[in-house]
Amino acid sequence: MSDVAPKLREVFVEALDLEDGVDVENLKYRDLEAWDSVGHMALVAAIEDEFDVEFDTDQVIDMSSFKVAVDMVTELQSKND
Image (cartoon, rainbow, N blue to C red; front, side, top):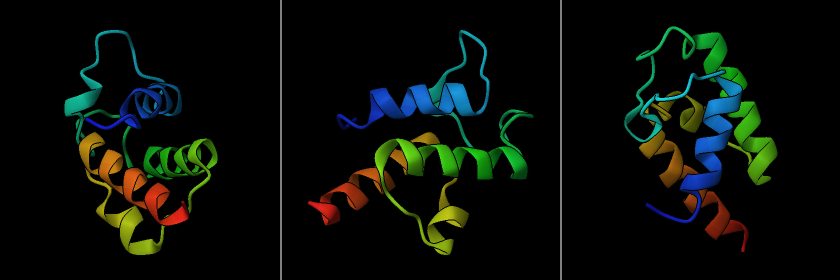
């Protein structure tokens, strides 16, 4: 995974208030009760704040897993460079 992954992992843990031992790298939307629609929007906001990026509506809807989020953030950062 890219260099985005370690920091994004921290954002997932904090935004979704995940317990130790959760396999964040393989996490998918609605795998956990915390990643429901409300948790999803909190997660999106936390990612945008941490990485100084902005997702469009389609990206918010398409963010279905940690791996997808890594790819999205990486792509957005490359566009901002």
